Image 1 (cartoon, rainbow, N blue to C red):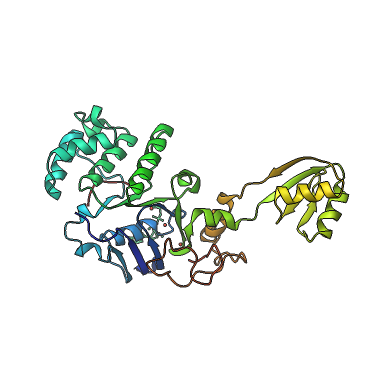
Image 2 (cartoon, rainbow, N blue to C red):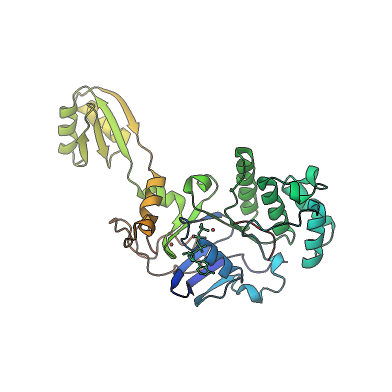
Length: 348
Ligand SMILES: Nc1ncnc2c1ncn2[C@@H]1O[C@H](COP(=O)(O)OP(=O)(O)OP(=O)(O)O)[C@@H](O)[C@H]1O
């Protein structure tokens, strides 16, 4: 059984491997009922952070808890947190069902649970096949089935989309969302925002072992000011009219259009109509999340300091454990930038 809420709290977590600081003062909170992406480029410190959360690596400083307790104080951890950290080797000659039966006995759940988890991950038809002949995608499903044996409140998955075909990714997306909708906590790492963008609602972005941003994906998206590209009959007249009405972020483009930031299509349309300027089309540019993700994390490869985009201040304090998804720290403007990360395998 799981007690408490399934909340994950990471506070000032640090891991030093000799001269290498893999994780540096990392703080974030993951609330139940949502899918949270744990994002960062390769080497950002994702796996190390997840391993500390799962009690596999001892922190140099700081603490990571589930339901307010470090992993080693969870009692029977398999019933609280299920994880898939890396592509652990399954015994190649053992069938999927037998593999699960062995682990079911180890975590103290009845054999019937094996049939349930096989069904949950869509592996029932392959239950009697040997894991040695499985594709990467099937091995990932088997790893997930193993993590689900204890019916955990919290799921922690490191790069779960690796090796899955588009159908598998769509399946995983639906599975994780419905898992979270049951009030459970899902934390999924990835180094590709696009891979998890449609699955997650919350995001923790790390780079250089530090949190760069955490909060809602919508808020991150909303922080990117979108532009409207307007095709008017008279570009100069529209620029003048917009500026006269207080819209100063207005630029004519080389193809005769006008790029407007900070105004809605309705505001622009109304204003053009009042000024008697015909408008033949308007196109709203979507916020480019990928670009923002790159901006937040690229310093890692450039060897530079944290990006200092004005609207992203360096994140200083973890938010209080309660009060939703971290979001920006109190008083801060969204999104907050701080210092920074990710695998699959069976139970520990
Ligand atoms: N056992 C270890 N000994 C020394 N350095 C380590 C060890 N484990 C990780 N590191 C280093 O810590 C940093 C973070 O590694 P980590 O594997 O946590 O990053 P990651 O974000 O998971 O990367 P990836 O996406 O490539 O798996 C890297 O520089 C890595 O080389």
